[in-house]
Length: 202
Image 1 (cartoon, one colour):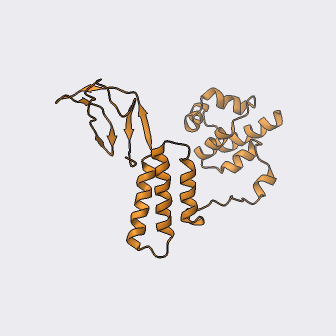
Image 2 (image 1 turned 135 degrees about the vertical axis):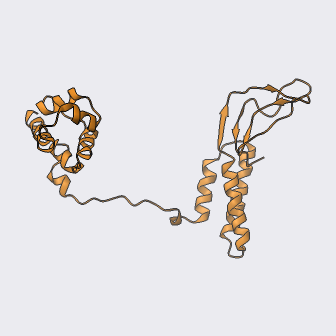
């Protein structure tokens, strides 16, 4: 363990020379006592601290991680293989619409109706007989439908308004809407909570 610490300590000294611990600490984002323990070999740095040190002094993070014994020569020489990321173009419109429908299943009747509307739009988009205008309209409709499921619920609260109404703040786009007060019981009849909603499904 001491050899590992010594290796890191030697690396620090080779990079910073006689620079004060307080100066090093300010650059790296740690306290001076931590730097002192690094240099004395009593404490190992965390990987993120190693990377921060290297970047603060214009050094290679890989070289610093090697000095701190987080990687070895095998890791350094190994080829980097990034997993392939799927693009939307890898999937057909029908597959994307099916995925969207899957994510909103088991919800209210209103939202089940939305799935049917999405499927209908997908048929229009995939059909070779659809015009460009019809396809664009269908795509916009899908966006509107999915946007309708972005709901931020907030505690219910009423605010007295004029003309026998209650103001119930409800966000549509960037506007607050007002919902009529129920004449019989004075309560809002549509919901037990109000929220910032994008209601594309009403």
